[in-house]
Image 1 (cartoon, rainbow, N blue to C red):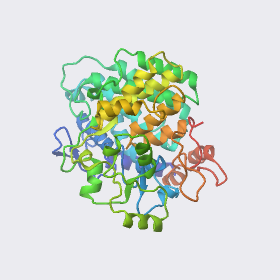
Image 2: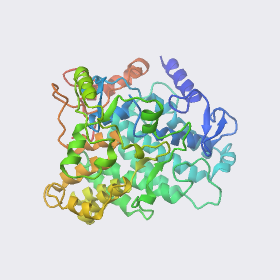
Image 3: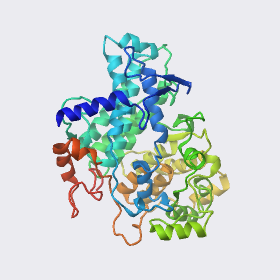
Image 4: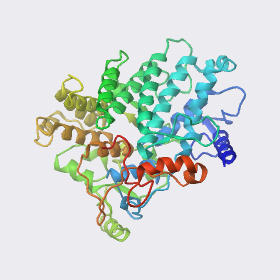
Length: 486
């Protein structure tokens, strides 16, 4: 079994970098040149490895039928329009090994090539060794954060070592190490005149990467608010105090702009290229927007007709046929071929800081950050109007003064749309908004169970991890809670 695991890991690592790729790679510095596998050459093409790892993030908020889409269903951002199994909580069968065999493997190779004296000089042609390592560490942390928040305990400290069956790390330990990695990565950057290649996120701007990393530190620390508030508060303050700063304006946002053609905005691809219509905007979020006169309703969806959440297939088909103008995800001009995919935005950071202030973690101005975060969100979605905005934030349901945590949490849930992974995580932590399970069901899932590969290829370690998520249905329940979900 151990030999089989190692063989599969090796094959995955060398045979596929982009999740779901066919073995060819596009170096997307200019989104055009075809390259052979950059992991299989004697001269490490670290710029291609970085670009490939970043391209995998273009679907970071959407992967039709994958865990990100399911998370968006659980967060009730989306509804299914005909095949409604996922929104009625059928057990997912999503594996996480594609991350390890793809982008995380690429990022680890960037670190290895830039650290090994035998290859460091060659790798330096693509940018400073230290800066390449720092960026790879930041992206690895981002990927692992996404994976652990979705599944819980995962292979981490021994992952990519290639020796034997890989044990799972507890999420509490993973969180602390992610914070360490991000802090060290920010400190690792150096001033360099070597042109940086392959960076389609910040174009080699190390100041942007530092702000991105520090913003992730804020998010990760705040997500610990109920599981380990002491550490969370300390780490939040440290990230906020870092002289490199955090994402504070739209110009700082971490976003990937698709060039069009082969690489497009994921929602454009879904609705225009593939021409599917299995998913709509949930009536849940549309009702919240409508009831509060929130102008984002005109950007979040193609119409204001939200699709009822969690219907049976028969009822969903009936509704779709009777309401052909039901809301598709994003207003069409917000999902053009080259519309950027936003990973972290200034409004999300400001609202996180507002919550930290409400918790007493900082002495920052909670109201200024809260209002500024909402304004940034309206502005990013192209709906800001000073008069309408002033009326919006003056409403009792929006105005801070009472139930501040709940109001901030609602705005965070809205600010993450359409990123279902983050929206679902925020709902699990704060319980806002008060989501109702699908009709006829009693509970909303709290995590994604491990995929079918794990019990077959890593049975002993899988069993130990799965036991942590046991309920009446048995181990590895989708209703089991991850460490920070209290």
